[in-house]
Length: 363
Image (cartoon, rainbow, N blue to C red; front, side, top):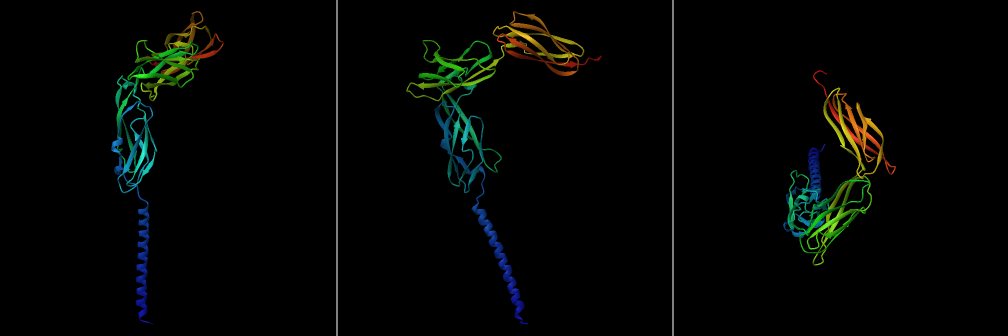
């Protein structure tokens, strides 16, 4: 056998080991190159909003004020913003998510409600305003807030800043309510528009002599169904130079209720000893004075009874209610009055009843 064969085999093994090592190194290098190509996102510290865009100066009141905010990434890697936090519900931010490449700037658009709050609507033509936003970035647990502030000038003030109709019986005559509007700057015109066809609106001077004090009159146009009243009135001021400002929103509130209402609306007997009887009087009355008939009374609850004791000309009926305390603890029941109105419509009037049965030392 050739003596050089073992040496050749050993040399070949060495070459194989070196080649394998080079292959592993090359593979690792390829992985490293791949990782370098896919840049990982970095923490928040590379992001900065444009300092000159954190103050919008003095602007007119606007419920949809738009403001652009450039954001620059000073780091060497791309940063992904997964969303924005806000310290109030008065702002929207678009886009909601974005990537700011390394060394570049991207812009977000803010829509901010600059309307003063009820408690701040104090007659001052100018008030300070501030809202803060915080970008959500992976790996950052503590939010970093960017304050955006400025001063807001109002053209008019509403006192109160809403119109409240309160509780309106469904069969009542059409009602009107007012709120006072004060012009804080010289105006050429003041107009109003209702978002609901159920209400007419107009603006009139408080007195013939005044030029800066007005009344917003809201009138119920037609009969409304039972339930909550919620709509908005837009009051648009026009400046003396002809410029129309953003409309100020005035909320209309109220509740349409059944014409026949109980008094009291609930019966709370409180703590009562077992095997005793609690009594209370209750009256059903038509708010509009229309006659009605109680056709049935349902007593839902153990020991509960109701008996008619008076009838005032058909528009008011009184009952005496007895509650026998039969079980310990808090108990709830109800009285259901089925009534027929003069227009032949029938309604159910419900009165809640509650008591707490208490055991005595001898029970």
